[in-house]
Image 1 (cartoon, rainbow, N blue to C red):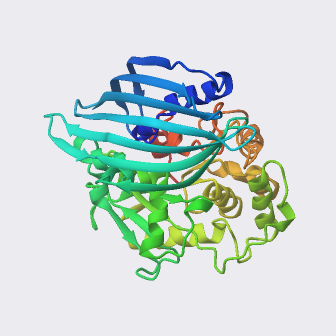
Image 2: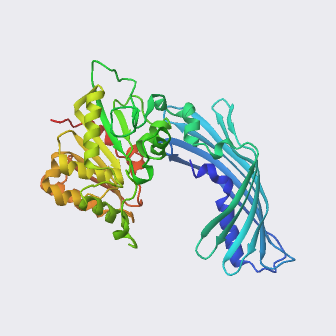
Image 3: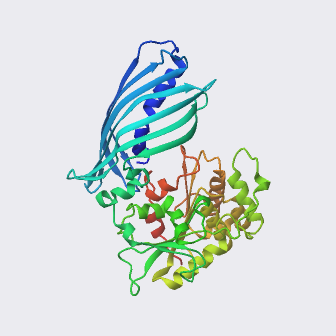
Length: 449
């Protein structure tokens, strides 16, 4: 949905314009007109749950060369689209937009570099509920300048000026539509800043409606963040955790409230800041793997840029002592840096606390070098993007192949999923199940002992 809500940038028209810049002579005196669009339908998981999208769009584009000044090209466009997003339970909303781009100028700056000044007027985004009531409406003008090098596609924004109410420019659209098609999972999400509890980490707490402080215990899932979501554990910094992964889906109403897991998503603090990355500087690829191996070789000494095994161990100990959770059904997951920390934790502590683990896009080979077949004491399901150029996919592939060999071959205790078209991501796909992987049912199938 993020890309769809930015359709007012008109990537299609921009591409046509760039083709024309490269192909049309500056002396052209007639306009070129393009009409394109039509109906489409697909299934999207932008918000963490599947929605069927049925849409229609239309674009009318005029591209012309400046008669008076060679090197200038202009385009104008009128476009509109309307989409109906329907969740599995039949609830829906409508997303629509229309806008006019008038005489957007492409001025040659020499060679393949062009500068554009764009004034977009219209109604970029409107969201209505199933009854037709407008929930959100953007309107007004957005003026922005940018350059594009058409030789390599380099885009450089020069500034923007916004007039009129544009609430959706700064709003996560999935959060806006959560009352229309999502769950109420965000109502059960609470920040626990560092220092407000006895935990050594700040964290977000999700307690499902089935949770109670006494009586029947709940299973526990602890989740650890990537480097980009690090912070100081304060209430403000904890919001970094809502950018991606499980905390994001819970915050957006993309988490089923009948899922019984207590979820605690903890934030790593690089304290003090200053991890020395210089030994890995200049690597053309897989610098993340190199940096993770550095942290491993330094025995996770402070400052550590990724979550450490002791942090995970201590946080789980805190969680089991302070929540009414089942100590035999504790599960751990992490993405990128959090996945590396998960691997390292398993190498050091094995099945002392957890019943299953899901590391995503992390470097596991240092953990294998340390623990060897000791890693097979915990059921593992590892994920990685095959095109990852930051953390080597072999960090998951080689490690899981070794673990599977320890167990006599791939089985339910040693699973590996490599997403062929993904780079350093895959956590949203794994956590949402959009590509058919149900990690939650799998985890809940194990207990310890």
